[in-house]
Length: 282
Image (cartoon, rainbow, N blue to C red):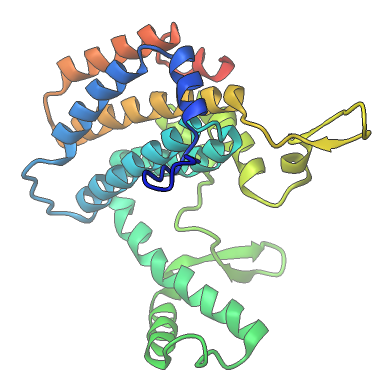
């Protein structure tokens, strides 16, 4: 934080300096990326199907995920940036899968009613009457929508006794299976598995922050995490380039020259091909 109260700054200038010392070409690379992203999303677009709406707007959310990952990484919050990376990976894989399976887009949207209804049921099991917390009309609407769509998302829980249960997600495929089908398998562990450990209350997340000390056997490491920050950013950069490719192909846009520039920039800053295999080892 800046110490001058007349010019408050949220962030750590010392970490910014360290970041650009590690990556002196990032400013130019980010400028090119920003220009391509602006060109991709700030355009006149007519969205006519559920798939088109989902793919376009999930893509727009991914841009924010990327910016948030960079913001944390640039300020030395390596593990914080990994938490954001997890969401970015999940959204891009989902977007890629729906781009290949447009007929499943309505299920993605309809599962919102199941998710909302399950949250209400779960809350009621703890709090009983929810009207002190949630508007009565909202509760009624959530329950009505849940009952309307629940039969669409029923699966067999036990083949022997033939009991049924509500699906845990909109798709029968888990994220790893989607990643394999869409070409994101190589980024699963650095982009999702390890970031998930940091995003949840896990012993692993604690363990990553501990170190031996001369004074105490175990000490919490509260400083910046530049290595984790760089690992997050290389994967996030890889993913956002893939996002441009998916959006370009799906909406039949001519971004060939832009993708060539972004790929070249990726090699310039990271010194590796942007196919994911090298990136995950960085």
